[in-house]
Image (cartoon, rainbow, N blue to C red; front, side, top):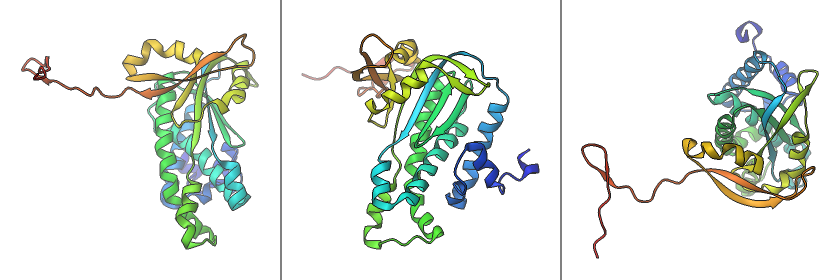
Length: 271
């Protein structure tokens, strides 16, 4: 399908599908455009094969940090580029992971992106890939300035690139979801997610108590750990609840040698 419709050339069609402003994908350097388009097409195909059924889902929200300050310093046009790259990275990251289940819904809202997953393992894999992709964007910004013919001061270029580097808070909530017209999610948990996002400031994947309770039995299997964040008020709940960050479990500091049968043999310390 992609070949017959020449999706690599028809960037306007992809921008309409993603609800991106016109020209968003054209701002991506050519060498980075193909993997982004491939990943987006993968997400498009995946969504077309799945029905959006009511049920319990993991609701992930990613929000671009520092956008107001960046716009004030460099102007709205540069802020738009930064936001567009952020949203593209959200969707690209989704298409680059091996999904265990499927993403039930995704869309962009201002400088935030909403995704609804049916598997927490996919949420964490997406978050990790998203971090890698965000880290790479700053290195492409200088070339992008050249492509667009934007004037800049060589003496402050390093500072400008550092300011541009997209950083995202992201967290996951859990809730029962129904759908309006088969695609638009209708649920209290989505509304709650937008009201509590400011409580997560670190780049690690945050989660609410509901998610922590659901994934706790799987943490060892996934080699993950919960790091306490803080207790927050979630609108609609009678009392404050704890929030956490989900991180990779640190490797053991002490690794003993193993014998011929693979058993660990930790030598005793000398007194």
